Image (tube, rainbow, N blue to C red):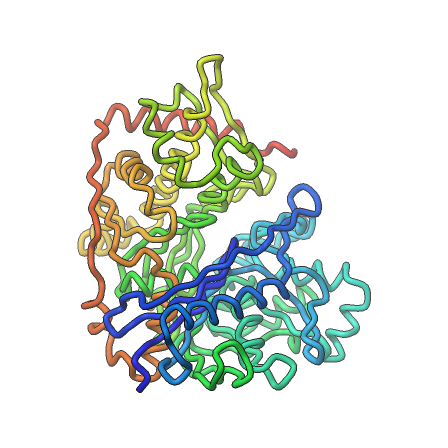
Length: 507
C-alpha cells in the first residue's frame, strides 16, 4: 500500500529527496551538494548533468534509509531553484551549455538595453517583474546568441529549455525516451515570458527576446499529473509525478499559507518573503515582484527576493576561510555584544528587492583596528535580518491600501520562517530583534520539500483537503523581540547608510 509521499528539492547548493508520511513527518531524507562554477566575476553556473546525477543519488539514498520501495510512494513532487536556466538536446539529453544560475549577472547589458529602450514598464505590466539579470528570459536570449549553432538547432526543434524543475522532471520521466517537457505556472512566472493575466507564454515577449516558442515547456497546474517515473530510473519503479512548484512558492504551500494575507520567509542561499494576495494581482511600486503563488485555483503573491543570505555564510567559509562550518557562526556571533560598528552588505551579484541595482557590489564598512572575525560573522547574520526588514517595509507600502491583510493576519507582528538557516537560534533571535516582531519556526524546517509533497499528495487524493494539511502544521519555537526601539532604529539607520555605499559600484 502506498503510504508515503516524496519530493525532490533541487536547490542552489544541492539536491535533497525527502519522504513524508500522512502526518507530514519526515520518514527519510538524503542530501548531496553540487559544484558552484564561477567562470569569471559575476558569472555563476551549474553542471546540469551533475545535478541529475546527484538527484539520482539522493532518491536512492533516501529510499534505502527509509526502507521505502516505489510501491510505497503514492506520488512524487518536484521543487527547484527558480530562474536557473538550462537548454539541452532532446535526442541525447546533453545540455548545450552549463546551467546559468539565477544569481548570474552576465545578462546585464541585455537588461540595460531593455531599460534604455523603454521596455521596463511594458515588461512589468505583463509579467509583474522588473527588468533584471535574475530572470530566465535574458538568460535564454544570451544562450541563443552566444552558444555556436544553438539558435539554428532551437528553430529546428532540436533544443528544449527549462528551469531546473523541467530538467529534473524530463529526466525522471525517461529523458530521451519520451521524457515529459513541462513546467508549472509558478516557475513560468519567473521567466519574464509569462503573461500573468492570460497565464500563457506571451508572443510579444517572445518576439522581444527573440525566443522560439517551441523551445518552451508545456504549462501545467502546480498540483496535477505530469507523468510517471521511468521504471529503469532511480525510483526502481513507476511512480506518478504530480506536483511542481518553484522553491519559494512550495515553501509558502508547506507553511500552509493558502489564504490571502498569509506570509512566510525562507532563509536559504537567498532569502525570500512571500505574501499570498489571493486571486488579486497586486502590482508593486516598492521594488517587489508580483508572481504566481500556486495554480489549481490560481492565487498570486507579492515577493521580496534577496539574492544573498546563507550564501554570505558560505562565502565566509569558502572564500575568506574565517569559519570551517556554517554552524560555527552562532557561537561566534554570540561571543560579541554587537558588530563593533561593522556592516556587511553582501551584494555579490547586485542588490535584489527592494533596490534592484544590478551595479551594486558587496561592501564591508565601519571596520577599525578593534574589528575581529566575530564582528564580521555577526555583521553577516545581521545583514540577513536587515535585508528582510527592508522587504517587509516595502511590502507594507504596497499593501497599505489593502488594510484587511494587516487587520486579519497581522503578518508584520508575527513572521513564519523556514529553510536551513532557521536552525540558527541566534539568527532567529536577531531577526525578531531587528523587526520588532515575533518569529515563528515550525516543527518541519524544510517546508520547501514538504510543500511539493503536499501538492503531489493532493493530486492523487493522499490528502483530501487543505484543512487536512493545516492540521499537520506545528510550532517548534517562537522568538520574541528583545531590543528596545532606540537600538533597533540606530542599527537600521546604519544599515541603510551602508547600502548606499554599495549601490552603483560598477558605474
